Length: 120
Image 1 (tube, one colour):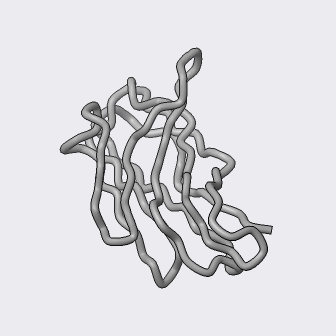
Image 2 (cartoon, helix red, strand yellow; image 1 turned 90 degrees about the horizontal axis):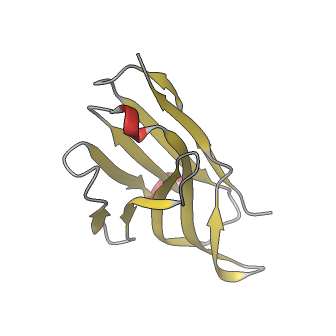
C-alpha cells in the first residue's frame, strides 16, 4: 500500500522555525510533483508550496520568503523548512504527491497530516 508519512510538526513560538518531512513508501517507481498544503480550523485546505520533479518551486504569497520546499529524490522525500513562523501559520499540514506505482500507475496521494501550532 502506498503511503506518504509526515513528521516534524509541533508547537513553536512566533518567529521560530520548524522543518516538516514527508517520505513516500518504498513501492513507488517515481514521483512527479510533490507539495504541502494546510488547513486551519474553519478554513478550506490551501496550497503552501509545490516542487516538480525538475525542481521548479511554487509558493503561496503568504509564505514567500519564509518557507522553503525541497526534495531528495533518492529518498523519495519532500521537506518544508518554515522560518519566521506566525500565529496565522497554525494549521494541519498535509503532504501531497503524484506517485507512479506498479499496481496503480500514476495517482495523487495525501499524507495523514501533521499539526503545526505557532503560539507564545
